[in-house]
Length: 240
Image: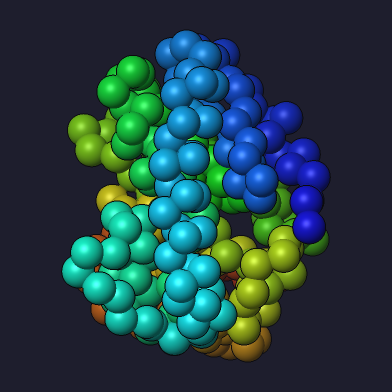
């Protein structure tokens, strides 16, 4: 099911070129120093092809809600997803959007020193300037009012969002937004799901943050439920 991504039209900075790259269900919004549509489409195909072939032979990888062991010679994207899922105890498909954004973004860094790849609310980025990432959390009063401030980074960063009230992705929790930050977008994606799954009411925010602090490689978390917000780690929230 395709979902309109109107938040993409709220970009305010103009220093980078924006374009989309769409292959089947993969719909990426990308910003770079120049239009890299051709290179992005090739990178998506290099991700999707091996992943689709693997799933045809291993359907459990697609359907499992728990980590799935994979072979050492499995495709790179399969191993990336499996490792992220294993780290937080969820099914490997919980990491797919972040993994695709990460792998495509890393390839595009060969052509552009700054890259932002957004894949359904999951972001891989390397920036040389301060950027604000607006928070969309369904009907929460924080939607459109807060942003994450991202400072220039030497290494790429993954910023991924899971929601129990927005979008088609499976979540066992009720958060309007669970945002996870990590050097790996695949891990951030899986972690956002794992942390969000633990929130059944606003009273669970504190416990979910404590759980997230124990995830190796995770550097920050934001959890929003209605008018309640909790945050931990290396995240800076600013008003819009």
